Length: 123
Image 1 (tube, rainbow, N blue to C red):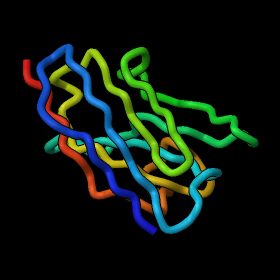
Image 2 (image 1 turned 90 degrees about the horizontal axis):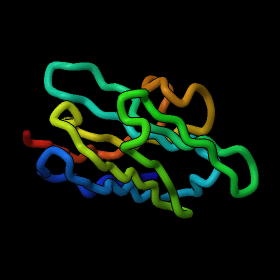
Image 3 (image 1 turned 135 degrees about the vertical axis):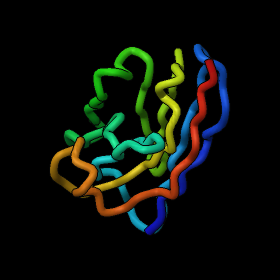
Image 4 (image 1 turned 180 degrees about the vertical axis):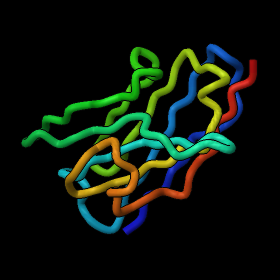
């Protein structure tokens, strides 16, 4: 089982990036898929998650500071985080993660983690 995150980079404030998280090894269609980030000297924090609600229905959740700027979405085996209107405070290493159940915003309950991808937003 593996999660492979990609898409990070350096962008000016106001710019956009799209992160991808490719899942392999088993089906993740009913898992909670989340994105977290960790800035230097800070704890890892929840950014966004998709929670399966049955069939092809997923519900998205976001931390308040990214609402209206970030969008989480997925295809069968890949989860995306479209980030727009980026701010310097969005600078962090971004991680994707998966869990079968539980609280979507709790990092401690996630069973699988990607390796992280650096996002740097310059002012």
